[in-house]
Image 1 (cartoon, rainbow, N blue to C red):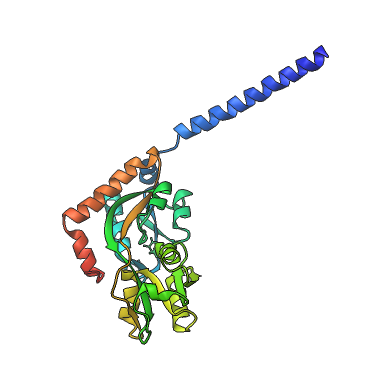
Image 2: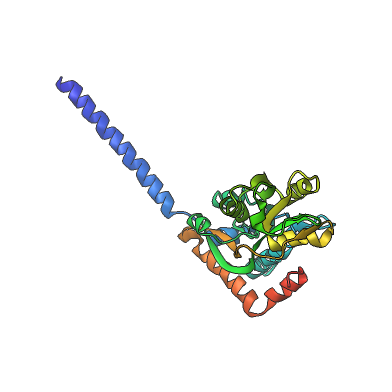
Length: 267
Ligand code: GLU
């Protein structure tokens, strides 16, 4: 009996030692999380998550280049960090995967028409806002729909993971919500008559109306959507957030942001 107790005792002590050893490793690792800004500088380029289907913020032009207001802001940050706006790798993100790509470290920051919301602030940090949009509705030109509240009992397209998806479900619970991964997919469904409207940010939807006279945007905003740059939480990301904020502030104070708005037809 004594021997059994002794062996049991040894086993318990060994197990506890193992647990303490692992715990110590995890704690040490936590403390050793490398600083994001230093990691980027050592790597020699910045990795930014951007949209590639969202005119005029992030889209592919006729030469196959990713361009737009968000891309110009990414270039300004790369230029500030490396004195070279080309030290930049752009990674395509969508509203449904941009938070995951940021939090898992696929990208350093996200500049992707992303609205600051309390829910997102629980997961990531945001820079100062660089643009304010608002939710509205895109409908075929001859549609009788003239307000968000009239979308009940209609098939309404949203982009998965957007603020507009959430707002629509809350504000018009009787709307039949059709989710799409990209704006072009939603737009195609609108053209085919599968859905009778798309709801999202005014600036994004307006670019479809500008390029195609068969659709129009309802001239009202149903929300305030401040766009800001997403950065991972944690003290290892604080310096990066400071640098990003410095660039955003500089763009605002030296008026460059207004030039960018004009360049991309946003003013
Ligand atoms: N600004 C909106 C959002 O953050 C939608 C725009 C988008 O990213 O497609 O959910």
